[in-house]
Image (cartoon, rainbow over the protein chains, first blue to last red):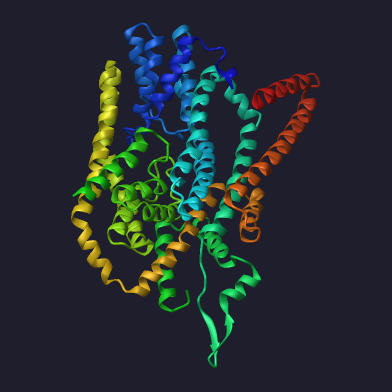
Length: 275
Length: 275
């Protein structure tokens, strides 16, 4: 990993370090119109002050970096690194097209948000939370720390090295990475882990047992839950989860309606003595 | 009064804090639950309810600023009320769900009405090159919006505690039981939301594999995560080989001389990646 920063000067290392710390605050003053624009600007200021000598050039760069920005936070330093390297090129070459900076920035944030959201929100957080929840249920007070460490160690490493990588690679390399299709392979691999975890947690966390038994002449002749368990363990939680998924995906039922509906049905079933 | 302060400060530092220290997951129920428990003198209840709320809010993700609920405020208040009233998930759940939705609405209101108008102020400061002003506004807006947001839990604790207690006492036991049942089924909605992010026809079988590993093999979640990672690595390796193969074939078709160069380039990259 140390290879990434080997071509960087001492100054540049310092600048990317400042960018790493400042980029934590990307969404501190998030606005509907420009999302993380102010945080992006704040992270780019060290570079702008370093690269540009003329006041007017500085102002132009500040206006440029105060544009709409919205992506996954783990991926943001990478975009900032790419942007910073382009600002450097712009400060050195008179014929550099400054508009291409925002074009690259904008073209990166969409796909990177998609990858970052599914890997970090969908997979890593789910694994961290799943492990922490099973710890917490046994009363282990380490649960919140385990959750924060499992999530943050990989995320902060990606942010740290992502920033350096973006800066050293610049914009030329990224198109290549996409063309090679490596991003798709990575996304698919991460989704496999995520989906397996979601399956495991469906079994682990969704609990729904029937209490209703068929009684005839004072004798219990059929225990509904026992019968279902013989067919397939956890068939009800699995079916309910798949039903919710189907409603969400195919019927576009909103989450709040789904939550409300689940609560109402559960209470009605409790009143009927079925659960 | 102490409880009101404690809950308000926790909301400020976790829900607000995760906007300052972006993407650190400080504002999740599994972190807030035990923290509120610690301050109100019942860590165990805080931990348990925090874990239960985490499973329910598991699917609530903040993607591109869009979300279905704000789990932080909901968890802080629900855990605090449950501890004060010596209740369990049956008390916390009916409070947490509506609070999550109300919290999100207030958060959105602050974001649009209070922070939103400053977007143009940022622009004019950038045009003037006013760096100090941008930094001050960037952090000032963070402090302002989360101070306002923290007033909700403060007043809810100050005035709401007795009223909530009175209302909750009126709820019959059978309904509280139904709500507990709902609390155990609701993770299904969360799982469904995660599946919406991750599901792809080609890899959907892995969901059922994950389910079986827990339902029948009784594997702990961490083992499922490691197993998933192993499968993902194998699949990614195969995909990578296939990908190289197809690239070779297509480059041979286009120009026979281009093939060796792509190969060495790929190999170099492979070395970089695993170093």
